[in-house]
Image (cartoon, rainbow, N blue to C red; front, side):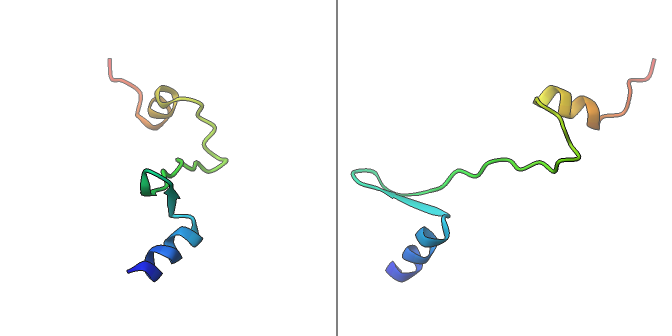
Length: 53
């Protein structure tokens, strides 16, 4: 178990903090350069079809 945890720490998926313990590293959302949306609103607006009137 210790070797597996050490491997995950080395690969950057886990981080060890004194007094807190081992935690999963929070991942960042990665967008391709072809999606220049700067906010969630603009991302969903760009992805959704236009409203029907």
